[in-house]
Structures are given as structure tokens and as C-alpha cells.
Length: 69
Image (spheres, rainbow, N blue to C red):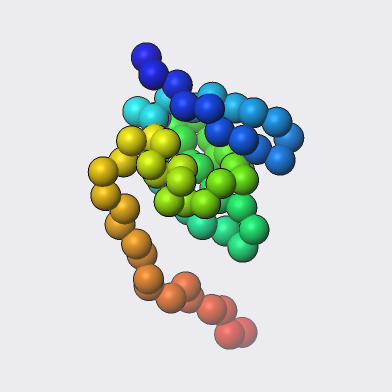
């Protein structure tokens, strides 16, 4: 099992790259979705993807739906 060390606002966490579902860019931080939950990390999505060993990054540029009541 390979673990990757990532910095969070609360400290350091270790994540198994095989358990990562998605890496999502937020306004200030990056969200890493895993099978066990969501973790917020300080690094950019590109750096996190490289550390996790992803060979290519798929960018979703679809605008989000806005509820207009």
C-alpha cells in the first residue's frame, strides 16, 4: 500500500491514491473525495493530482445550475 502525504489546514494526512474518487478545486483550497470521506488540502489540484500519480487530469468546465426561485 502506498500513502501520499498531504497538508491540510489542521495538519498532515496520509491518503491511499487507490481510494481517491475525485480532486475538486474550491475557492481557497482543494477538496479530495475518497471512499471514506472528504478531505480539504492546501495544495492546488494539479499538485495533488501529480502527487497521487494521476497521468491525466480531466477538467469539467460545465457551469453549475443556479436555482432561481
